[in-house]
Amino acid sequence: MTLICTKDQARAADACAIQDHHIPSLVLMEHAAMETCRYVPAGQKIRIVCGPGNNGADGLAMTRLLLQRHEDVSAFLTSDHLSDDEQTQLDILHSFGIHVQTENFNDWLRDAQVIVDCLFGNGLSRPIEGKYKDYIEAINASDAKVISVDLPSGLEATTGNILGTAVQADVTVALDCLKAGHLVQAGPQVCGELHCADIGIPKSLHPGAKELITKELAAAALPARSIYGHKGTFGKALMIGGSRQMHGAISFAAQACYRSGIGTLTLFVPEPITDILSIKMDCAMKLSAPSQDGFFAQKAVGQLADQIHSFDPVTIGNGMGRSAVTEAMVRTVLESECPAIVDADGLWALRHQRQLLLRQADTIVTPHVKELTYLIDLDVKEIADDPIHAAEWFASLYPNCTLILKSGITVIARGSKQYVFVRPDSGLAKGGSGDVLCGILTGMYGQAKDPLTAAISAVYVHSLCAKQKKDPAGIQPEDWIYRIPEAIGTLRRA
Ligand SMILES: NC(=O)C1=CN([C@@H]2O[C@H](COP(=O)(O)OP(=O)(O)OC[C@H]3O[C@@H](n4cnc5c(N)ncnc54)[C@H](OP(=O)(O)O)[C@@H]3O)[C@@H](O)[C@H]2O)[C@@H](O)CC1
Ligand SMILES: [K+]
Image (tube, rainbow, N blue to C red; front, side):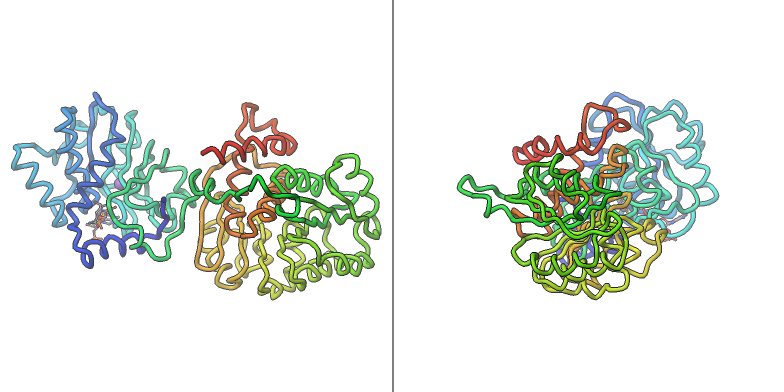
């Protein structure tokens, strides 16, 4: 399990382990140094740059351990004001007669093949300037491989902002937990390859932490599929949407839903596209609704209200268009007791009737950043800059509603639970991608009947579908859809 914390949450977990549970901080530091050394390649000229706090102390401990590995390693100490633990680490080195460099930084760094960045970690408190700026510029100018311990120095642990300047790492080894700053804003650009090392702090000491969605978590979230099940066991979904102008959206969602394991699927669509969808998809039943100008007509609202109650789940929004009829249909769905999934134009339709999200029945919404502005009072920039906070805010307003927020990272939130998925993929940056996710989600919910596990498995499977031999630029929604069964199979065997 990999947790994601703010700077303060991570520091509180450290303090709790040390003060309340009597795990000496030097024990945690030894674990940190041992774990981080595993990422340092053997047989290289290694230079470890140590700052004035415990991040620097980690670097001194690593120096000792790498010397035991007979590596060509040397540490540079940037300050003579040391934290208590750093002083202890320095005393240990001196007791073995190991020299620590304090002058001529640029000469010392020359010809380094690996630089370990232990300048600042979770204690960075202000913009970097003066000699520290010079050190970081020299590190960034070097051709050596750069490994940052806990955080690239200069990266703010919670916000992902760069304070003054920052080390550009090739590898970052986060200690104990990921910090939100690794994942948002400048974080992904400066961290390089990101790993998280367990240093022995119990997971239970991180109240309020988010959880990273890993393959193991997603595999555990996949709905079980009993060999004795029948079509009624796996969900009887209704999808409402489509228009003459945008019938592709509901077609993609429907095909993805069927390939994700739904028992039966019925499409409630405007009359002019019923035949098109019949040609595209034999497996879904169709309910043809009155239309006007290619979209649902007002009369379709009453027809939906008569039909809706026998379905579980009901998904609304894909390719539906934005109108008073869309608003009324979303109201009809959310005022029913059916589990509901709201996507695309259905989210727009909630902007003046957000209270509908306070319903008791299971509800999942799947906005991208702009669509989330219809549901909470944050603007696009505020959400994009801090999607984790935006999701937290959403969950506090609508505690029974499950959110899948699609931004640079994907954040799933419900009540106090929050999960983060990080796998940037330009192949998914295309029209139709959201519709495919919505279809997979509908299929997963139909089988799982649990919004959180359905959301986790759907997000992961969607991302697996984009992993193809083809170049991401050339992939289109059909390619993802055909991959769904294979992706689910891969995950089930994981
Ligand atoms: N026992 C534990 O908890 C464990 C901790 N571990 C490790 O400790 C790290 C956290 O250690 P930390 O709290 O000492 O903070 P760290 O990042 O080393 O820097 C603090 C120093 O920098 C200074 N300073 C800050 N900003 C500055 C600036 N812009 N320019 C100049 N100076 C600046 C600041 O000065 P001050 O603000 O006090 O004036 C202070 O002297 C954590 O990331 C992990 O690597 C692991 O070993 C596991 C066990
Ligand atoms: K660092």
